[in-house]
Length: 212
Image 1 (cartoon, rainbow, N blue to C red):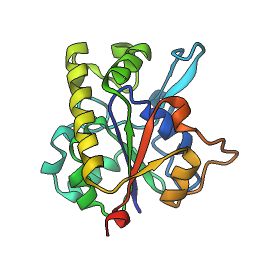
Image 2: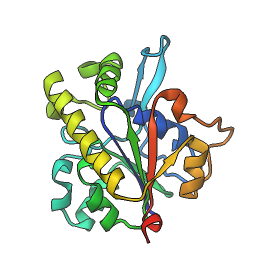
Image 3: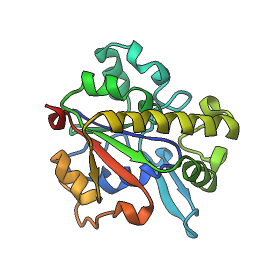
Image 4: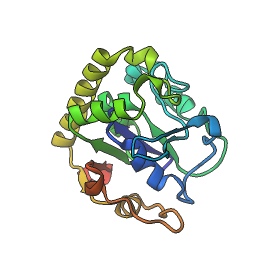
C-alpha cells in the first residue's frame, strides 16, 4: 500500500479526519511544513484546521486533477509524490477525487479510499465559517472562484461521491481508531479517537478486498 486517498467536498470536515490519523508512524510526514498549515477560530478558539499537502486545480499541488483519469498511472504518481521525500504510506487528499473514484479504485486496487460526507449546505456553511476565500492554505480562489461556483462544486462533488458509495461496497466507519485498524496502520501515539458522529460527519472506507 503506497497511498491512502482521501476525498470529500470543501466544508465536509475531511481535514479533521486527516489530522486524526496523519501522525501514524506508518505514514510519510515529509509533506508537512509550517507554510502548509491553516489555523482558524471557527470553533470559538484557534484550532489547526489544515495540515500538510492538498491537491486540487489552482492549489500548490494538483493542477490538472480535474482531468485525473486522462493521465497515466506513472504521471499521476509523479504528481502524488511531489511534496514527499520520506518513507511510509502517503496520504493524498483532493476534493476533485470525488469525480474520479472509479479510476482511482481501478488504478490503485491495493490502496484504500476514505470518503467524507456531509450535507451540501452544511459543507458550504462550514467552509464559509472556516474562512472561505481568506483561507491561506490551501488557496481556493483560482478553481472555485466565488461562492456561487463553490456551491456548485460542492453539490457535484458530493453527488459523484455518493454515487460511488451507493454502487460500491464501502464500510461506514465510526471513529479514527477503527479507520486506522481497517487500513492496517497504527493509530497515532497517545491517540484519542475522533468520534465521527460527534462531529456531524459520515466517513466511509473503500477497499478493493471488500469487492473481491
